[in-house]
Image (cartoon, rainbow, N blue to C red; front, side):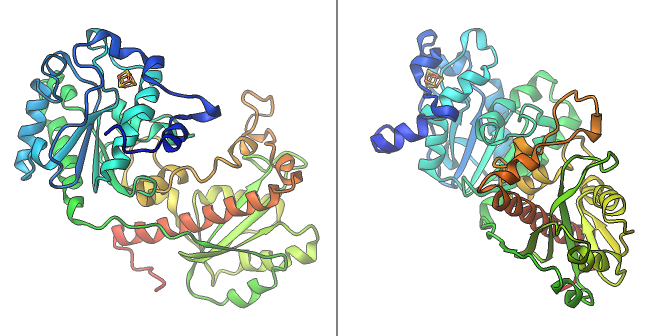
Length: 413
Ligand code: SF4
């Protein structure tokens, strides 16, 4: 594997956030094991990558991955679905040296090894399907790209088949087989695990779907809304506001976006005059326009309190539908749903820090965020409009997918 990347590429890949350079010397695990820097292993005939946690004692002694009890369980289970671990897959780990006493690798060690080996191997082999086995593998494959809640909560990640747009592969997290072994192969856990593996392996035959970049049309004059108001199709909308709740004096809606197709939306800064906002108010009031949002309570409350209008024509709440389809905690947010459904990671990093209220602010949910500071920067308005536009489009795409899955007959096309 060494030699695949040029020096320049290696340097840029090895530079983490803030220019931090990750190296084996910085990690140090190679000093304590029999088989340091274990190489990816397997013939990779079916284009599957299996990423585990770390070599254990048996693996370290033999210099090959998946040799112990957990490895045998993985091999047996994959065989049920016609897959041979070492012939059809490439196997690698979140850390590729055995940690002393088989302890769990630290996030720091995972960061080092991702940069030095694991991420490079995934880019070199270009697997069709990447099965992430356990929390360390999820941290290695997803964690560094995830600015929201960390990837350590495996319960919310397992079971998804994610069309990852960076890796251009189906990313499929599930339990590590050693967890199943430790549980005594509890029946309900085994059922979930086998289901996860079955779904992941099905994806070997399915083309990886590219998520098309939507067109975000920036508009100043909202009078066009009067001409789309008679449309019978579904329309999503999303606001960017100065706080989470609208009730304190001085709070404002700063930007909004409306999507009527999965590939296009209009995005605008909120007009300062009553006349400028009037077409939006008419559009919101028009019950003939079927509307959706991701958490309609939010858009409804801001429309009512700030624009003084009752929204009519609510048709869909993609947050509620996400919860109906899968009620695990911590998964119904739009960023999480966008990643697991469309493989788009973290499109909000440009604006995130400005949209958070200060933690423990005395105003609680009414505390102001820093969107106004961002809007004063030369590129601030564009960043906000792109962000709100992507929110509107992804919630629209999500709603269409949910309707399909739920057999809902409100399909505008
Ligand atoms: S675990 Fe990875 S980064 Fe750490 S020493 Fe081994 S090969 Fe290098």
